Image 1 (cartoon, rainbow, N blue to C red):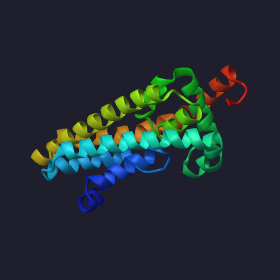
Image 2 (cartoon, helix red, strand yellow):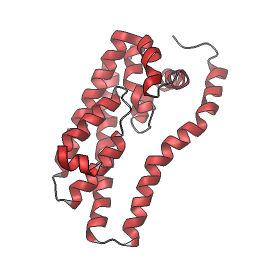
Image 3 (cartoon, helix red, strand yellow):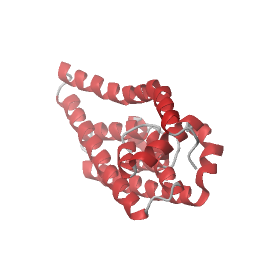
Length: 204
């Protein structure tokens, strides 16, 4: 990932973020963190990364919203499984969206799988544009800034000294990247059972 960033720059990371937001199975989170570390180690401008990331996330949200509004649920059912959005995950995402609205859009930005479908679901369910833009843009800013600064700090620790502290930070970062998707997969069936109890029929 660092080699790709060194070759193609921060706009490659921005492309990953935008495409992941509309459903593509790309490692945007890992790319953003790798770029933050790379920026600190090689003395690149962190704010260029942050601005590129925010712009990409916002544009991806807008594109995903209008794709959902135009093509609807049929698009998710037909092509979703090809990018990991199975019928089960789509149904869970619908239930969370119907139950929590803007909060779901905000929180989904920080969760793999849900991040891929939140914008499309918002458009499919005809969430008011202003509410979606507010929630998704706020989430994009917090997500990009938070991960970029955390990774930049991690890169500083590695640059200054290959100390046990730096190694510990690296292990924590890896655990976060790998642990959250693992937890989601682990509790997916339990959450689906809850959805079926509270909403026996598939949502429109």
